[in-house]
Length: 175
Figure 1 (cartoon, rainbow, N blue to C red):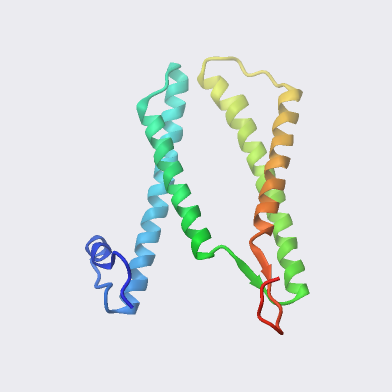
Figure 2 (cartoon, rainbow, N blue to C red):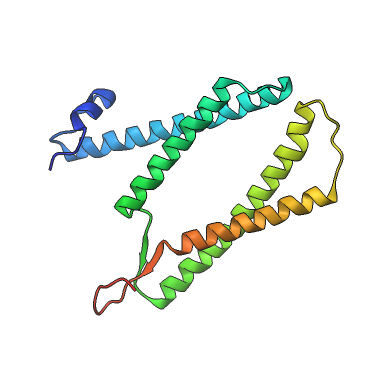
């Protein structure tokens, strides 16, 4: 089976990806790792550019371009994974389903705490100091970011829960 764009990808990776399955898998792994590194680099550069803009109280074209590139690539990834149903986790028993939901609950709590903490530190401490303002602790702002993190974690839980599908053994249908 020929893959779309395999000649083009072969030139990037330097492997014969059209006929050899092993080299095709290695090529996809190399491209995936390269994309991950580039995505992380773009995120870092966007944050550095945003920090620079805050220090100088301007908005640069670079920050906007980094943001647009990251958003477009994220949207493409989400659409492709939804189209291919690559993110769906299939479970076959009630025990597996409950175990998967329990894992989702724990990870949603962690990601909510992480998001709320990161946003509080970034928005209330780092950006204020970068803008030349004095940091003053505000209990109200802390509560706002904690509630924002809880809301974010809850939304992520429900979005992730939709991706867990229980399959009955008798019919093979998705419930």
